Length: 132
Image (tube, rainbow, N blue to C red; front, top):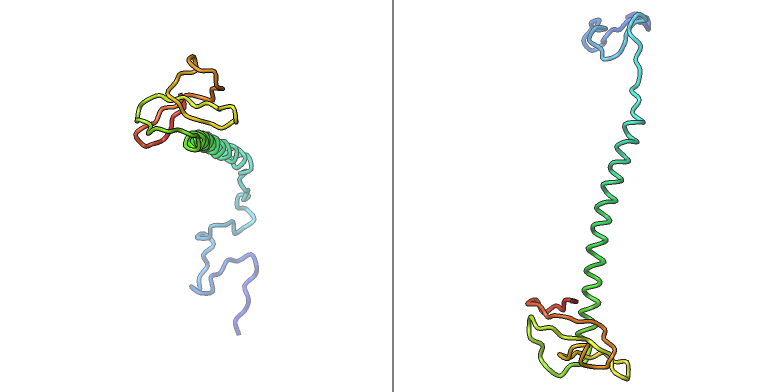
C-alpha cells in the first residue's frame, strides 16, 4: 500500500518524481509572496480610450448620415415639385412655392419674381440636386 505524501511536499504522481522547482507557483513557506497585479487602473484607462474612439466614430457616422438625409430631403422636395421642362445638368434652378403653397421649379432668379424662394439647386451628373 502506498503512503500519502504530506501536503507541503510537491510530488508529481504521473512522473513519480518531486518537481517543486518546476512549478509556476510557490511551493514552500520561504517562497516569495504571490501578489496579483492591479489591473483596474489599466482597464479603466483603456475603457475610457476605447469609449472615446467609439464615440468619435459614431459622431462621424452620424454627421455623414445627417448629411445624406438632408441631401435626400432636398432631392425629394425638388423632384416632387412641379416643372414643365427637362432640367439640364449643371444649370442653376430655383425652387419656389406658389399661391396654393405648392412647390415649383423655375429658371427665374429670386430677384426677378415675387414667389417665396425655398432655395437654389443645381442638377449634377448623378441626377441628384445639390443645394446652392
